[in-house]
Image (cartoon, rainbow, N blue to C red; front, side):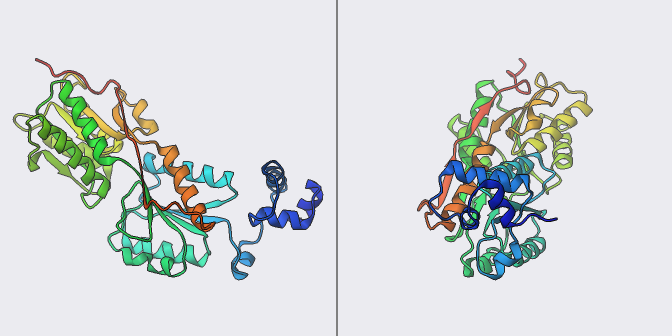
Length: 336
């Protein structure tokens, strides 16, 4: 039989009221005792009725997470971090993969509202911010993760993309590279634009330009686009000696292209990625990349949503975390 709140109370040795207070985040119950009750709930597989809670206007202890593509290791790791932090705080996460399509985004936002989620974390690109209006009207907290979002109703958590682009350029410049090209996903993605802007500024500081022809952008099939764009760049006259890729999947596509052309990395071409997903350390050669603090971003996004729910929201609309250069074997000094 399905466990009830009475079973939880009896097993935990507390009153039904105490269990209810733990479920609803209320009451003067110690953190240790609260965790003990949560463990009993988990062991008995007790789940409060989300539908009943929604109908009575109570919290459902669910959050929505929208990502472009859950098969992308970066967003898979974001989802894992969000889910892990949500679980620690007693929340379930509903994950939706949007492919950056407004039609899908609208459908998922409607679905999540019907499920009465308590808050929303958005990691997908959105052309139409009006889609958020129903959430705003219902005072549902919204946090954007790994994306900047120009809305006064949305708090954002992201890495310093501009600074990350500068770090990549400075690393390649220190290795003596001057013929450099950039691979980006669709330029409507704000993070790619900022990474390119930072990269350009660092080059300009060294007296170099980044011509528009040296910036290749594509769609959202990142591995395929990275390989195709790199094949084009490395077969042209005066090919670049180094590539900065605005995410790790593009960089892995670039590694595949170099191998297909019989070029050595880094002896013939150096490659820098961005994200530092788990794949970056297992490529051949391992990938030099700009690391995003993925776990910290996911934790912070959940904490910001819950702070808004408790009316303790941080006044800062934007939380910018620091990127870090991780040097591995895909970059080296330019061959003389």
